[in-house]
Amino acid sequence: AQSVTQLGSHVSVSEGALVLLRCNYSSSVPPYLFWYVQYPNQGLQLLLKYTSAATLVKGINGFEAEFKKSETSFHLTKPSAHMSDAAEYFCAVSVTGTASKLTFGTGTRLQVTL
Amino acid sequence: DGGITQSPKYLFRKEGQNVTLSCEQNLNHDAMYWYRQDPGQGLRLIYYSQIVNDFQKGDIAEGYSVSREKKESFPLTVTSAQKNPTAFYLCASSMASYTGELFFGEGSRLTVL
Image 1: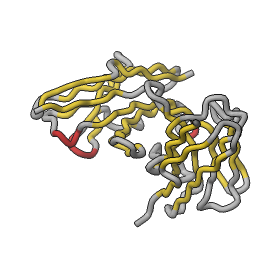
Image 2: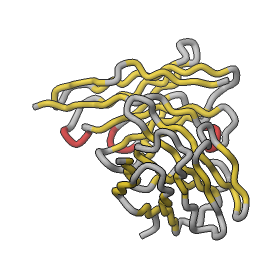
Image 3: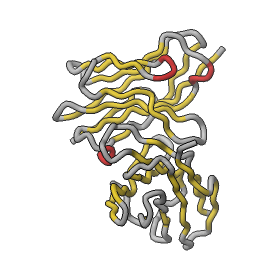
């Protein structure tokens, strides 16, 4: 079985501050892990993915995530928040490598304030 | 530009009526998916299709039906049997050889009055 938990349904940061969105997974085998972003009333867009290569994964828009097996975590970070980063972020896990077996977290809404 | 087109963007229906949501892609992807999104619940898989004329139930298929007669098209019908159909519906596609990346449409918001 696989599952993913996103800690914090809402996160608020000031523009220019560090963004940290937390994701912990549960998996009996090495997982594939993903972060997606959703802007209001739109579909999701892939930010980055971990597929057992480098543990530090760089994505689009300056985001990155680090796979930590010992902590079963895949937290998303960005050094300096921008107003345009305000969106909802979803962590997802798949242990089989098939998109039909993706399990999504419940999402974290990021608010960026001036 | 390649992408996924969902229509309509907003839809209202009365209880007891069936409604069909359209999803068309020109990415030449073999696999297509329908997800339902409710506030605070993330995305849940309704149906998916990996090849034309074949589709599989996802986690919440009850009250929904699909067809896959063409590679480009994967319409979803929300039937009157779906007890709580008001939601945001997302269509996605991916290459058959799994990359982990889903490409999403902009969604259809269904409201049952």
